[in-house]
Image 1 (cartoon, helix red, strand yellow):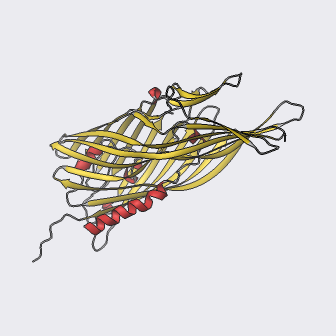
Image 2 (cartoon, one colour):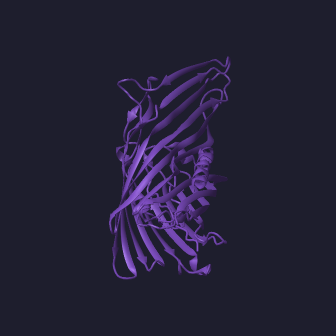
Length: 436
């Protein structure tokens, strides 16, 4: 047991660097805190993220920590997931394809004692990764062409420990406590074909070290011998996360290469801080005989009340970098999904397969030049394959295919095809062996 636990911790540490890699190429990641990561596990991704009412004995559902109370009493579960995607970007008649792959998450869980489960792991929170440029003509005597180059990288991650407890039959409560960490670097370089024009660079940076807390509850009502309904609710605490946002404006003389830098990092009367929103979630899951499970989730993120540092410049070249509101809007997401398994405890491989499907719609959480950012449509199909060998028949390989579209009026349309692969190791650590 102790060797296996040490192995799990070493694997978690080994993936720390892998998870620092971004899972996106999207130019939309330059806005807000970046592209919000899909935090669902490989099991949930087959249902397009539906999770709030689900609780399984052999899977970890960290989107609702109350579900940890249902972890099987004899098992230690270790779950890791990767994803690869192909994305097509379209703007007018211009098209471009991009590929990337990413280590998505790593989590573990076990039952500490009766009706009390524990989980821990590493998850993404936001991703930032983009690089592109635009050109424009300047109406002057030299026919100068200006080039604006945009680039950025980084994102936020969270290391969490959670627990779920079932104090009375049918009712479970839980909490995830996370260490939220990460950084970002964004830059805008304005250069000109005129050799006498200075190059102007704006560099935005921040580094976050803070906490994140999420609560959950589930109540299961047994409708009859074969049917049950579970109501799941979640609440995430919104608060300022610091980060020490900073803006450096660098003017470089094209003739001498001498640079002049002005730094804006806030003052005592103008403290710059990043912030995460308060979140609410509610979901229902209908379970028929542990064969068919249907779920629906609604999530609300209260971004409209979140403040953010903002750059502004007046006609008189007065520059400011100050906190402001009105850059974000509340994000809403509705997801529907299903899981079908003919006979989970059967000895037949075919009858133990899980077939999953789901669809989702999400509104944007930020504005672009006063207009709504991209809305998101997605759909997925997935399958859970039991891993059967001479010493373990409880582990599962989850595979899903997912289509995601982000689109906004007069802006870029993204169509992504993503393959998610997750391997859930289910080791029987806590069984009492009997020797005859």
